[in-house]
Length: 493
Ligand code: ADP
Image (tube, rainbow, N blue to C red; front, side, top):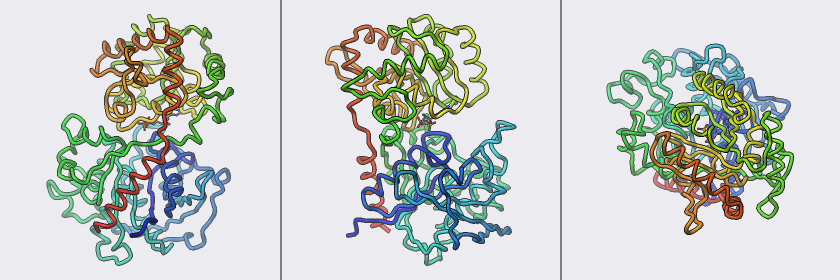
């Protein structure tokens, strides 16, 4: 039995090269953990315009300068460059086709606020090009690990157009769903440009979804196994409530669905070494945390008072994240003895809403509507509590980062939040955060109130903080689970 595999990890975003959310953090960390376990793992991602070739030392690969890729009637010529994932020996290939990828924004056209209209062509080409690059490299992975809809056509091409291709006959696929709400759903006219057989689009067929073409569905149907990023979310997505229209398709594959919790890259998210925070600290010496709080409040323009707890929030401003109940709770929260620092971008409706509240509560609320990695780290370090009132949350990373920074999570009981945060029980002292169940403003306010009450008792709070900081969610545990899953799909081939 072999215990080292060739694994190709394909992701539309990888930190630190290009990031819009948690997937990038996972894609920048899990491969390193797999490499440490002795596997030959390589990454492929698109070469977006925002990726600095100089900063990350992208190199030309002579063989990969001109690779013809045929999609239906069109022939493209793509190229690929390579670099190492920083601080590792994990090789990353950047697939380049400038007319499609030489853009700073990954999925959304910044001038319209809407998705790029050619997203189906862009990511179909990416999927097809990934497979061609493997052939040119003569590198046969045992598993292609796909992530989200942007990569979900890979299993579909392998099982249809490339079914007879001997090069791929021993290649298995795993599709990880990081967020079921994003499926890549397009008009039927794209079938021709993405080059999948027409019969896949018959009613109820592998890519047909209420009269449209659904990339993620194709991946779910054709991948050898499917995983998602927490055990709880793996159950939830098979229900009507969280299934986003695909619960039936998922249930048909129930025995092939696995939940593996995301880990944390503690080289990046660690208050003892974090280069973005001015004062390093650890569970045995928390003094730096207080100084980071002062630095944070000064930077975002709020008055500093060590006695007043600060609630941090870092989030895409999307429906999913609970902003409707937060809006309803906001006046009540602002009436408490608390300050709040929010960092996020997304739906213009929430931009407006938070700007309004920030104007009304200038000494209590700081609203930062942009993507800002250094500020994200300072918020983790300088806040006392971290709020995630999500309607649903596949895994959630910030609550796990928060634990390591001694910033106590206040979360709703859903998905990965439910799998990582246990409600604090003052009787037993057990628990690492504050959890509420009902999705409404009352339950949210009540959880914040409970956190503030415990905060008043500084000895208890400090104990809670230290316990949280000592928890370990490093990738090594989850990476082993992925290897067991790879093994399962490889051996059943
Ligand atoms: P999701 O993937 O749904 O956005 P996660 O909690 O899994 O949520 O991951 C979010 C990641 O994106 C975290 O690393 C978080 O710090 C980061 N992030 C989100 N919004 C911003 C922002 N405005 N500025 C900096 N980092 C952000």
